[in-house]
Length: 355
Image 1 (tube, rainbow, N blue to C red):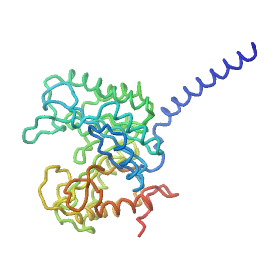
Image 2 (cartoon, rainbow, N blue to C red; image 1 turned 90 degrees about the vertical axis):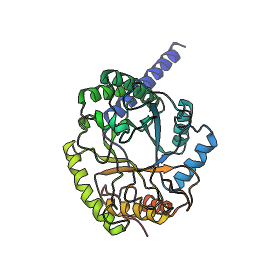
Image 3 (cartoon, rainbow, N blue to C red; image 1 turned 180 degrees about the horizontal axis):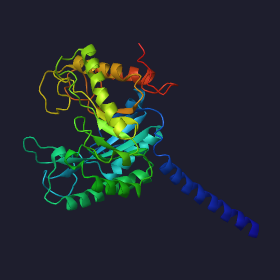
Image 4 (cartoon, rainbow, N blue to C red; image 1 turned 90 degrees about the horizontal axis):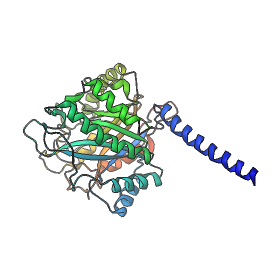
């Protein structure tokens, strides 16, 4: 009996040590991001129906997606206010977030959790990048509480990647404050951490050395000068990549992940892809060309460790003007790249798109 008890205690000790080692190893190996992240943003918003997650994750997986981004909008009244609240139409509940994470993991897919600040009231020229509260200390205290809540959930659910913030341009030179935020996150989440910088505001990010990989959205105006011609947009991307490469060198040559990129299927999508409210006729072919140019420009680019396309959501189809590639020619382009080229080959480079 005594021998059995001793064996049982030894087994418990081994399991506890193994669990501690797993957490420590994840923390120490945070810079190891694994294989190329063939990503897509899932439009979760306020959805709670398990069947919704199953259907959409199955469709995404059939495209070759192996990494799912879950964006969590937390609402702030306006650029000068302090504090966050949920909007029942756009903010997923903790329950629905956990459900989506578990359904993705059940399919062997990785998860990237990305909380963002959403402003209810906007004046001309205002957005999350122009926050200006009267008390920055108070704002960061509320932000830390909010982001730590989701970081703790990410740790509990073994989420693979986590973003400390997104596009908060007016805060990015506040290095000490952001270092405190990152420490808070690391106290509850052992995985790789990034920050999603805005495409036109990379260099002001002063805390890149504290991150495990460099995140950015990439709504570059690649067709602004030439229109949606693939070769011209590829050439424009090559110029853009020089700037991204310099930014990467300045931050320790960390891997770059494009945490968000997409194109609405409307005329003018290549000119202002960031414009959620842009006008124009349905133009699925222009959307397709934008994706094709992206793939041609980035194939073989070793600094890229992953990309998340915005957004799998809604019914889609040729008359839809929104960002989703669902039921549009762009869907086939994404599937071809992910099937034959999204992942890295033996050299560590994304392979070319297969015909």
